[in-house]
Length: 633
Image 1: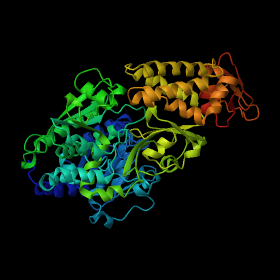
Image 2 (image 1 turned 180 degrees about the horizontal axis):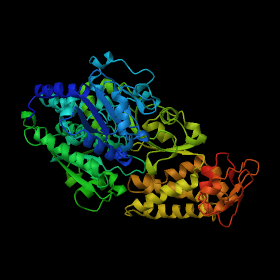
Image 3 (image 1 turned 90 degrees about the vertical axis):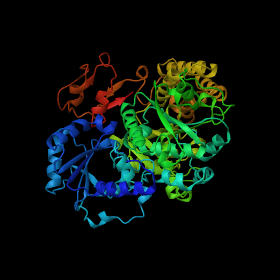
Image 4 (image 1 turned 180 degrees about the vertical axis):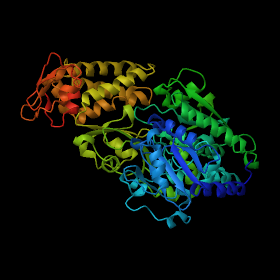
């Protein structure tokens, strides 16, 4: 059907909101984002569809990711009059047990992740909750009572894991497109921009520039204006934007529509990396559905406003995450940044005024317009409003996506939601902001997460990557790794970045391989400062951050590498070796069985020995020993 008014949306919403919460039979939602598919969800879904074909009393649907990637594949089952139950790690072979558990109402604690409350979005939270009448399962917590979810407030991720991303009806059922259609009928351009400005929404792509000010600046400049979505998420360990596109693409389209109407644009582009095939597939589907429903194209919802969106796939160049490089690539040119003295809101894509925001920024916009600026700005800190999505990865028990209010401390995210460090190891540092972010030590675990707060300690918000490191991480090698990544991703256009990063990497490589010498630390600091000051774009100006912050907070590790020729963490192979601790060794023989070089010998229950000539320092013995009998020297 073609949407012409809010009443048309209400008809669809009433029907599909009911189906989302109260199916006629049994409904099974399988998490089919990339994380779930990688864990085996595709085979789970195929088996479910084979055993319960269309027309059966069991309806099988796909959803996006609800964030707890560590427990994928996740499967939710619901039926009228019964609780919504989310089962964890449901691989193909476990599916029959899960069905039996739910149908017979045995509710095994070993299989269940938790119960799902009525999955209404934040925009519907004031409505009465009919599912409160359903008795909870004794001993099985609700998802929002589990530490991983307890402190989360989902705005950008409000629909991920709850709706079928290929269903515009389900998106409408959760309040989708209401904000945009009401705006078309009731609001002026200036009122929309004023609301976004008052909300305090800042760009979630890295720079943190106020979104409302950017929209206002773009509207002031004459010419054909463009609305661009930056979905070129290139940070190692970051997958926030990918998850939104895979789980709720319509939220991004609606945000772009509101931005387009506010600034007076008729043309939009989504620049997404080609390595995100599932995100691209679901975006293509969402665009077609929006066009079929009259929410994209000409005369949208019966108005004189028209807006067209095209998808452009990038080749995966990290530098194309920078706005001017992205627009150059979008034009078909080499993705190289340009000097910032001419802003893209004045002359951007095709030299026209261009508004660029990232996926998460646009996903926030519809809810702000429905709930109001005061509601959004009531969350967060003085200068960082609302919530932020982080990908929590690395040496942490619960990896996944978390969306928390700005101002949440690093300790809460890592130790309460993330569950702390596995294998009883000690926390060492956390890197925020991607490969160009700084490494934050334990002393700042109680730091509130915000744009300005992270900058003060030498890091940055970035797009939201959060990599946790434990005692087994060598900070010198870590800085070398990220600098090596950035060297390969530099466009090579400006000398400070092209040559400076290479020279810093050479010094770090020498230090890690035992060739470090006095003065190297000071040289790194001097070069890092120079690169920050004189590089052309954000890649270069932020590239030294991992090096400078590790020197600032972990200088003793650099000194140990240079002066003692030792790697305290046991990572840099030329600077350490493994030995068997005679007092701790129990002769369990596990390390000998696991060693690929047969470098460890000894009889069971007797002291083992390690042949240094055979040892390749792979670390398998160190990781497998339960008695800490393998030590780093």
